[in-house]
Image 1 (cartoon, protein in one colour):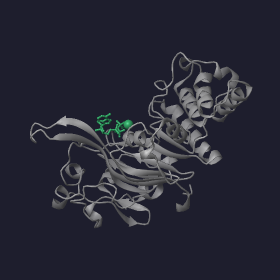
Image 2 (tube, rainbow, N blue to C red):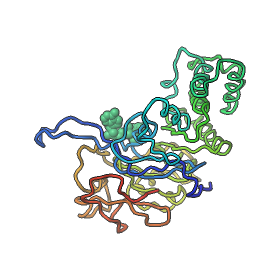
Image 3 (cartoon, rainbow, N blue to C red):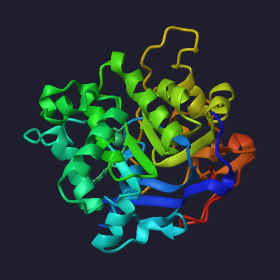
Amino acid sequence: MAVAEQSSVVMDVQGLTKHFPAGRSSLLGGERRFVHAVDDVSFSLHRGEILGLVGESGSGKSTIARVLSGLYPATAGQALFHGQDVLKLRGRRRMLGYRSRVQMVFQDPFGSLNPVKTVAYHIERPLLIHHRTKRGSATRERLYELLRTVGLTPPEDVAAKLPNQLSGGQRQRVSFARALAVNPEVILADEPISMLDVSIRMGILNLMGRLRQEQGLSYLYITHDLASARYLCDRIIVLYAGHLMESAPAEELMREPLHPYTRLLLTAVPKPRQRQGRVRVEARGEIPTVVSPQPGCRFANRCPNVMDRCRVETPGVAEVRPRHFVRCFLYDVPSVEGRSAPGTGVGNG
Ligand SMILES: Nc1ncnc2c1ncn2[C@@H]1O[C@H](COP(=O)(O)OP(=O)(O)OP(=O)(O)O)[C@@H](O)[C@H]1O
Ligand SMILES: [Mg+2]
């Protein structure tokens, strides 16, 4: 799929960093400790692009989406949405305005829908809040139109149902209809298919692809599943322990992965001609929880190519080929030792 040009950047994220307090250390003289959930991650999202965010559990994927949607404050960095830094948005009205343009869809459609409210309620509510329309025939028409758009027909019947009267796939379609109700430009989709039955996952991925084609939507598609990222995404970012390790156009990343971590992940992914199974992102060993990290590559302990330097210096991110970024000393990238302020990093995607 063609990737949009640089001029159509919708969201430009630089040095995104999120640390969570993790108590005080007994060893370090009571110093405050922090989980470094996301450190110095940079990327841009273009109009009509599907950008994959792939990584094991705990790598920081959801944290990135939550910070970008305003659910968590950022520790550092900036995220320019049409030139405005959304990490600094204050005030309900401004946040509401932003949320009407950047919506989130979560992993668990059941958890995000109120079990005692109808489908109509869930979709009409954002219409009433964001568009300040009154309940009436225009709102109803828009509701039906949205249900048709996401493939829930006949809309009159579906609108009256409660969440538990729908299948998991249908519930996730309701989540997308609810997100679409406010005419967003961007959808941050956090593992939207991971709780669904394998047989209906393709339907949701195809819906996402169709909405991109028809409405020019852009997505940040978060997943454990490299096979689905390859199917859907224009570009893929590989995260490990809060660091961006590699980012490249999806085909190139699959064909010529450069980072040892990405290579390890890809050994588990079936070739396109092989039977498509679900492939979760896994490599041997445990992903570390990064509490007050010391210098060094975060993947060093699991890396088959580890060098002495990797244990004491942190590699920066470098563009080693056009649009192909890697954080690894195998590629002669600069180290970032002594650089404490995030956001000074190279643009990486
Ligand atoms: N509210 C929080 N308070 C403290 N630590 C948190 C919080 N949310 C996330 N973390 C930590 O931040 C790190 C990244 O978590 P995150 O949920 O972003 O990972 P993820 O890649 O989405 O994982 P998964 O695939 O399991 O959803 C983890 O170490 C996690 O324990
Ligand atoms: Mg998550």
